[in-house]
Amino acid sequence: MGSAFSERIERVCTAFASQRAFIEPSGGVVTFQDFFDAILRFAERMSQAGVKPGHHVVVDYREPVAFAALKFAIMRLGASPIAVTPETVLQNGPIRVDWSIVSPERKLTEHPNTLVFDATWAGAPETYTPIAPGGGIIHATSGTTGLPKLRRDTEEVFLARINNGLVARGELTGPVLVAHNYGTLIGIKSVATALLQMQLQMPMLWSVEQTLTTLVDCKVTHAFVPPIHLKRLAEVAADACIQTPLLERINVGGGALSASFAQDCERIFGCEIYTDYGSTETDTIACARARDTEATPGLVGRIWPGYNFKFVSEDGTPSSAETGGELFMKPPQNIQTRNYPGDESLADKDGWVSTGDIGYLQENGDLVLVGRKSDLINTGGNKVSPLVVEQTILGMGEVPEVAVFRLPTDTGIDAVGVAVAGAPDLEPKALEERLRSDFNALYEYRVFLRDALPYGETGKVKRDALTKEYSAG
Image (cartoon, rainbow, N blue to C red):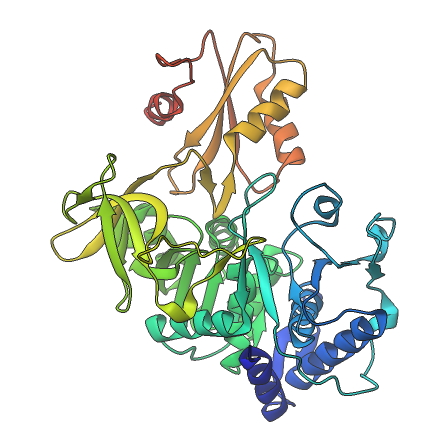
């Protein structure tokens, strides 16, 4: 295997050494040379500790610029960063982690090969660490609560996916806001895209208002944003009357937006808002202007050239594009990811990959999605497992029956609905706060008390009935 991605990073950082590459959360500036020196320094430290080609390294450090440099340093060593927590790797199972890099607060982790990322990692590299072939990246399919499914990309596939997005969306014309979590595939891919396009980039800063004012000062023209952060940015920009005259385009990945919310955002930011559709298995495959979904909810745009697709009905037989069904894709060979840890192809013997989405094509060729095969709730770009949330609530010992379901909101970002039966004295707001604390403070939880849950003939709770009932008020 080659190392095309690491080679490209080195060439760009060397050629544009004195130019600004990152704005740190603190407001500090990192040049391309600074960032490349960090990659070399981190690779040097890990190599001295014993990290070798083929190793899997988990990084539990969330300062975004250092986090990105750590991941790229691991790939430079011919190893792979892996998107699991240090706690996960201690569990019995097929996932193999050779090294764990943690912040000083986490140094008591029990992983046998733990490296503490502290101030001693700072400074210029003492030696030049050459690129070792075989590097890659092991990432999770989503932000699912609990243990996610994992996929592995080689450096060549990772670079091809970056190029795939650039060909479809166009080149970046100026500085970039990357509001996605750098620990996600979409986040680290956005970081790499801005780097390879030689553009200054910034993450979300300590406050939303600081992010917006810095975005204006840095003349940001393009933003990669998850729905949940777009909502926060729009609210603060409107309340503080912050204008963003140079912003040209916002690409929202990981979840849908309502047309009315997209129209509000276009008015607030003065630019076009697009939603990207795709998956870990297929990469991004379509893009649509979010305001155009007013007439057709679920519209995600036209599938990009180079992707073959088909629809399959519930009984497994082929279905016409107009009738629709489960969407299967045949991604280009150069961007196909593989399963981890088994390294199996995700496609069937004919090369088809299931997206898990149900949809159809309009007459003009645009793809419209109407639902998913699974019950996972997509809230602001993260997937929440109803079963895990239900088990957590039942484990509190205060609720005899609970059902978690998708709850659409007027922003188009789904909330997590929680229907509780048999607990008339429960305080809904208190449970909502407990769930935000236990899972993710950015998720919106809404708890409803009722006499009984709706069950179907098989004895399973009818989550879709709850979604319909509470969506209708």
